[in-house]
Image (cartoon, rainbow, N blue to C red; front, top):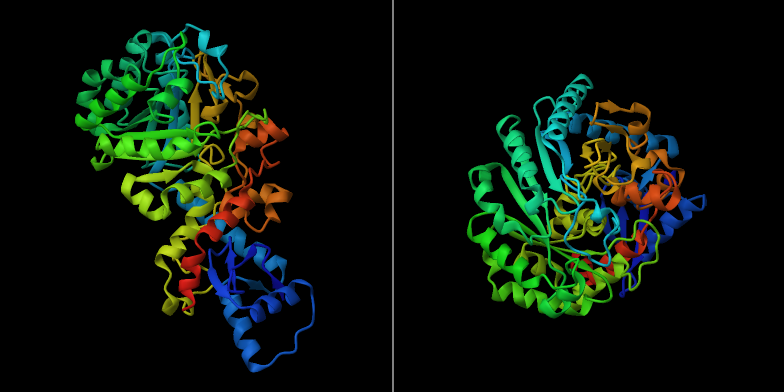
Length: 484
């Protein structure tokens, strides 16, 4: 008998422990005696069996905390992974085509991961390049169907850049949107700085039913935002962006507001929340807010970088209860934070002691599924088209030709070997497969792993252990309530 590789324990102030398992999703509060039993098993100490202990071991086995041996655990892991892979292939969630209409950008945000030299390139996709891009779309969809994936799925197309919505890209945008929706029935959305959004809404109005949302960033109240999200000429953008968000919401378009946080603007998140309320944005059902740390995918030691677990702690300090904050603003955490805490959050919200004894190696939440892969790039569900004619497996890789997996202009070519490199999960990494929380994490951002460590299966862990520990600490009251 062995303790699961994917067990983690966290001590509470009353001396009890939170026990979680990232494979099964099980979550329990245990006392020191049970903790000692698990520790003894982990250390291969021989146990003296008695009826109560046998009952406890049976319970821990059902919950996925114990296995006969590592082979049994790996077999369980493989079965779950293969079923999830099959389910994904047959799901309604298909491919996302990411269209970089141009590398040009009218802003010069100091933390931009793309760097600003690329933003000076004045080229936008031409009609001929757009035609070739849609020919590539046809070939990719045909390839996916031949692989037995996404035959009846709804596919998406995302516009981004650079900055996708510029006066100089209008014809490109019109061509891409018109064809994407009218010919392919794609769902569409855009990641935009929002400065020229008002010039595109009339065109997009007839396509509103197929338009999911605009992701637009505001990094704080006006006096903070205008120091960060500035034009190439150095002027602020807050007033124009805020006006365009209001306009889009009023016209029925969904807006996902993003706030990129580091130590420079952390103290002003609360003031921005007040502004959001004053504008009544959070009263619109089509509004959402994502608070996300500025990423450092390249290991550049960005000045005033804020680790994600510190941001998580500060959100609690600023707003008190996380769930109330999220409900009030239809808010969510940044991608990594959300993935690493979502299954534990779900367990806390729906925990039912009466059902625990009925569950086998599953979870206190029936649909708490492990993360074998953090993102769609690892699932080969992203196809990003760069403005120079190259195809990338991840939208964040666009503009770095050395990471391209193919081309769509002047001719289509997809390098199967380069593309296959992205199709890796936690079992392809020795470090991840033996990490207790890897199935809460999914192996991290594939692109960050590649940039920082030279390979997708060499994880940049990004303080993931501290993030989960912080979340449990901030929710200690909820865990203590579970044992009353």
